[in-house]
Image 1 (tube, rainbow, N blue to C red):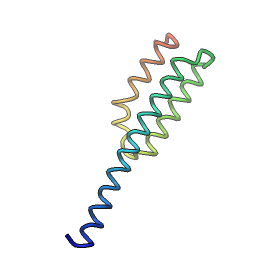
Image 2 (image 1 turned 45 degrees about the vertical axis):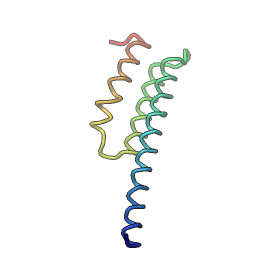
Image 3 (image 1 turned 60 degrees about the vertical axis):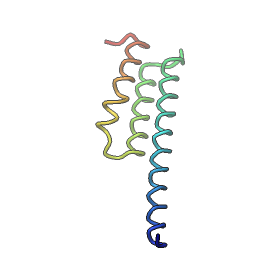
Image 4 (image 1 turned 90 degrees about the horizontal axis):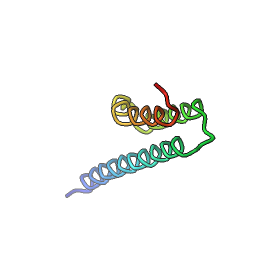
Length: 89
């Protein structure tokens, strides 16, 4: 294996590692957001909505062009949580 091939393999692994870190970071962030929304009794519906919107912006900053994936994975969970927490319909 040449030096160039090793460098290419190393860069590829680094990209995969970075993506794995970003995925884990996103999972932890969304877990924290959902915990705050469900447990903070002083949180208003407006504050919870802003928290959810900020989480979406952060997720899209980590994963540009993945809005559809966000809308399929996290949006329904957040909507369900908001409906349960604030009795929305």
